[in-house]
Image (tube, rainbow, N blue to C red):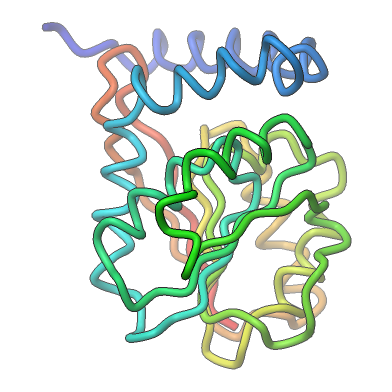
Length: 210
């Protein structure tokens, strides 16, 4: 199969961005949430497996991990399958997505939980997590500047925030806000990430250390 060139990939990403942002209520609730759940579990499962593989060896033993914008919880399932020592939590704005996530993570209920929540007002205490991860979510954030403050608040010293998303995600806003406010001490690390999905072969991966 021929891999799309960079211009084609950018066009596909831009069209997806317009579609997703123009239809967010329909996409994340009711029938849309059920379709999203099916897509995440079946059609793009390879992406979540690759993200889990990328994360799993870097996570501390017994780490507390938060998945922001967890959707139907597929990444939580993949992490739980790989590491029995992890304590996993997920949040999402959509109650319908959380209902799907609760079904999907039920077999790991002793170490995985999900709830509704907003990245700009995370429902957790300060210094609660070793790692916060988000995938295909930050490009939906209406206020990434506010999100940065909350991400830094819930991370423990030395903890990491890792964002996997399309190139149009607000990576610059996130890193600039973190720098201006002195919220993350480590230098931002951005690299390409292979998705394993032929029609959108590459994403970006941003990592910040508190």
